[in-house]
Length: 174
Image (cartoon, one colour):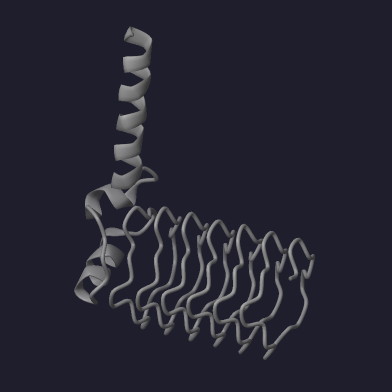
C-alpha cells in the first residue's frame, strides 16, 4: 500500500506492482516502463507526464487521476477504468484498450492511433474531435451521442444537470 506516496521522477521500470493500492500517489514524470500493475487501484493520483510505455495495467482502476501528457503507448489497459480522469494530451498509441471505460474523462488532444479500442466505452467522455469519434465508432468503441461529446458537457452530464435542475425547482415550488 503506497497510498499518498510522493514518487515524482522516480524510475520504477519493470516493477511488479500487481494489486497495488496507490490512492493519491504522486508519480509525476515517473518512469514505469514495462511495469506489471494488473488489478491495481491508482485512484486520484498525479500521473502527469508519467511514462507507462508497455506497462501492463489490465483491470486497473485509474479513476480520478490526472494523467495529462502521460504516455501509455503499447500498454495493456484491457478493462481499465478511467472514470473522471484528466487525460489531456495523453498518448495511447498502440495500446490495448479493449473493454476500458472512459466515462466522464477529459480526452482532449489524446493520441489513440493504432490503439485497440474494440468494446471500450467512451460514453460521457469529452474533448474528442469529430474525426476521433468517427474513428472510434468505426473501430468498435461504444460512445453515446457523438455531437454531445465534443463539449465539456456530455450527454450523461446533461441528463444529470436536467435532473438536478428539475429537483431543485420541485423543492422550491413545494
